[in-house]
Amino acid sequence: MGGRLRLLAIILMLAACAAPAQTLARPGLAGSGLNTDPWWKQAVFYRFAASPDGPTDYKSIATRLDALHSLGVDALLVPMPAMPASPAPDPSLDDFDELIHQAAQRGMRVLVTFIAPSATADLAPTARFWLTRGVAGFHLITPPNVTPQDSQSIVQSLRKITNSVVGQRIVLSDFNPGTSLSPLASPASRPSSHIVSASRANRSGDSTDAQLQIDARLSQIALPNAASIRPLLAQSLGAPNLLLDFQPPSPPSGSPDPYPALARAMAAILLTSHSAALIDEGLNLQPVATPSSTTPSAPTLADWYSKLSALHHGNATVRYGSVTPLSFDAQNALVWVIRPASNSSLAPPVVVVCNLSSSPLQLSLTSAIHGLNLRGSYLITLLRSDQAMGAQDLNSVALPPFAVYIGELHR
Image 1: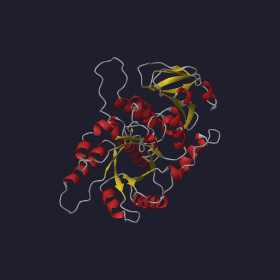
Image 2: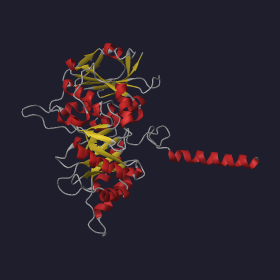
Image 3: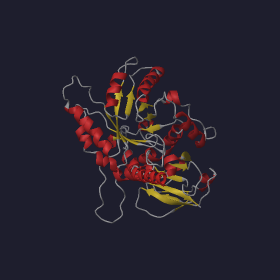
């Protein structure tokens, strides 16, 4: 009996010693012991565009990993290197391998853009070559002018290959709203966010679809306002596992560029309205600077993304909740409520308010919030893009021009 007790004590001691090594630093990530979801479910992706001047400089990307890590990035999308023509050493391939190694040391994954040459091409040799080098998956670009059926066939072919490799390798594809969503429904007929969440959960296990789809419709709005963005946001919630893609388009001729002023609102849409998020290199985010004084100041855009990413990773409601957009188009305000997956005082609803106008904003949210069968009278601040502080009365939420406010609903 004594020997068995000593053996049990040794096993328990070894388990206790091993536990910290198996726990990731960031709470909530798969493998942390707090979350068993696949890693991509709530990941933040950062996409690098192909260089117009020649091959991608993977060594240069590697030098940015610390800055990207400070933005809360979990995975990189980079252009696929050229396939080596011979077994001879290839400096570019060595740089790519080193990028994967350096990213892994920071808990980040690397995916590559995979351009399918044709609808009938055999993707297996190329895909397996990169999978054996450690890539976490592919952003699949299907050939132009192929039918939706052929495009889906290509996705299925690549999924079959990634499914055969250990390590939760994934496929991302480009979203085609014409084949995946019905026309915009009226507010009365649109499914509730709880139904949407159930549909998202059910479909996410489909082994033939891409795990995530990139929806570029935000980038097609030339002069954004609440009336143009809200229906698109509401519709996107009906498709599971979307990554909203935002690359600011050029403004119409003779019109001012609205995006510099709206950059923080667009960031809030990307990082709080959907489970996973995509940040594009075209946003030109600079590394987060360490404040040189204790004087409060409005966060830089990079700092704002960093704070949103921390909220995305760390707040249970934002991470797992269901989203319901509210209509405040007349005030040019974009508002949505994130309801927790389960009712708990530890995870209250979160309200996001974006003032998309150049004038100060004051809103009463009481009626709209109570119409969702939620109770509360004030919002405790989680994050805001201006310098103001303190809670907000639900009946009188005030924001400066182009500001964003995120708060928890309390009674």
